[in-house]
Length: 439
Image 1 (spheres, rainbow, N blue to C red):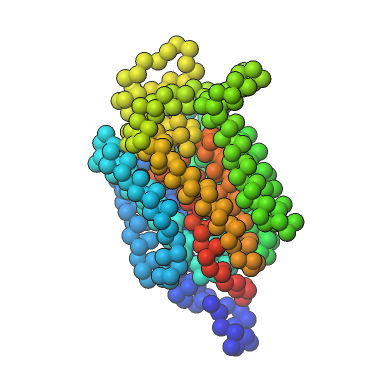
Image 2 (cartoon, rainbow, N blue to C red):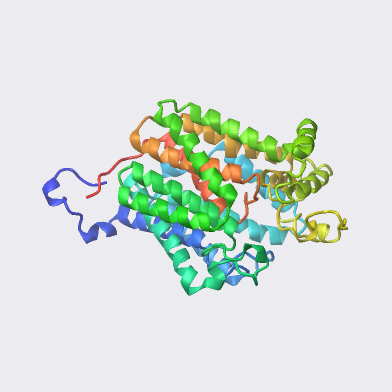
């Protein structure tokens, strides 16, 4: 951090300040964040996904480099105490179940290649959190990443319109005209822009008002053009649940509202399939409530889970595999489960791939632990602002996971933001975040 011994000589930070140890660490964090969110194949809707057989050399080299840079940066720039603080028994247990599902996969070698991308993604997000020395450095990381990601996405609308927009020639012509930017689908672009809008609010609250307003407005405009009604509704909901109790001096209200929102959403989605009383009420009062056919997927996944409740089917060993390709497709089923790549519910997919015990650990690690960490945040301005930002990200993505599936999904940007939020809440709850005025 800056020295206060000679304010007259440090009123204006020289260019060389960017090449200090802290400046280099901040720059590495910004580059890591930008690269992993943009991915190594931007503007390639068909090719940006990591191939199932691990044969994409670009992604192999790219993620391998990210892992190497992250490890080097942790060893060279990070404080060991801060790095150790991110480790928790629940995360270690969760990763243990994850690796067990890899071992139990129908093709362990292929699953291990895919899992390596997931592990590198988690490592990279942890590195991004611990490299910045203070709140000002982390703000710089956010500003750089948001400007690069949104800038590329907006430029792509004009330079690469067939890739940055859904078109009538895409696999989902009904989405023609909707924006997706550098991402593979509007359902990824929308949530990422939502997370950047939360970042804009964070920057505005801690004094970076011009950058905060610009990022918030740009993110919201792009998000609305993705056509995601769920995302558009969850953004103000998440902001309200986190900000209102805090502004009223009742921070304990946020975890309570968080828990109520998760429970209500779980009952309103999976509950109409697996809870008989709720299913009966939905049939009577909301007979057309299927979440665009998702209830069919959930019913099928539930019936298959009943056959392997303890271990699941293994990582990358259920959706889109020969196990389902050989299934019969009833004529009255809204979706053909043989062509589905995930179950459109992250929590159910964890159970199907890893088993119900793993789901229980995930509920604690991904939902209960963040609420506990939020309640433990020191009542310091920088901790509160950063904790509120991470809480918005976690709440939004956790609710979104009831309709989409991204948990442990390799380099999925929504999953990476979720990891950032969960690990970030742990970090701000365990140590004071240093504040530094801009020079």
